[in-house]
Image (cartoon, rainbow, N blue to C red):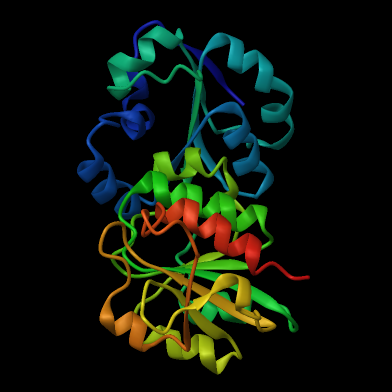
Length: 276
């Protein structure tokens, strides 16, 4: 495992690897580049640890001297010898990345093959199971927080709609505390048609929505196989997604507030529908 000390992060000898870390502020550029180039970024020591523990393959590491020392034993044990570890002063990171990576640790990882809905369903064991389904949640912070809630409450997998934000975008991975790296997820290819695949596997699709016929969560008896469907920020679920659900449920709350942030709502709903 080569440890390469750098004072200048524009060093042409390392340009191919260091390009992975450029222009991190440009969300649209990164969203286009990363899936096409087959990479994602893991930021922070704990997220890097979790990425490696989940079996993700590293392309390179960019570390401050302190973080390089902290991770030295782990990198020596699990990282292939041809994967470079670039070490540079943390204040130099901003000149390369465009952001202040004060955590002093970031890794470029090979993106795993994309799962389809059928792949996710095929990976589930028999018996009671729970899924979270996200329709067009476009804020990467919310996606990360949703994955963290899903992992905290024992969800078996996450299905995201075609227009949902990338769960492997850097901010999503960081906010999820790396849970997105081990919690199985898939991207639907037919929407909302893939909800039929869930029902075909025995799932009841429960939409979290403020409809007139919605059942209060406290009165809802969760089935053995439950898929909790949550919609985009602001507008909520589309009419087509609601039509594809088996039941609508709502979180009862003070009449002066009609809704919660989607990530907060997911935590409440997942706790209430947890296996008893």
